Length: 68
Image (cartoon, rainbow, N blue to C red):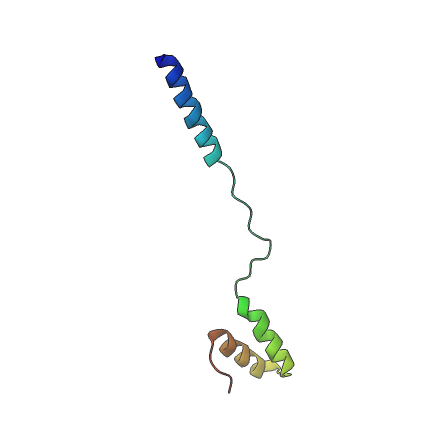
C-alpha cells in the first residue's frame, strides 16, 4: 500500500514538473515598443511636416504634449 501511494505521489509530482518545464509562447517577431509612434507619424504626415519640425512634433506627440 505504501509503495503504491509513493508511486502515485511520484507520478503526480513528475507530471507537475513536466508541465512546468513547457516553453512559453514566443513573443511576436516585431514587438511594438511605442504604440503611439505610428499614430504620431501619421499625424505628422497629414500635416506635411519634415525635418526638425517633424521630429519635434513626433517627440511631443509621444510625450502627450499638446501641439503648438
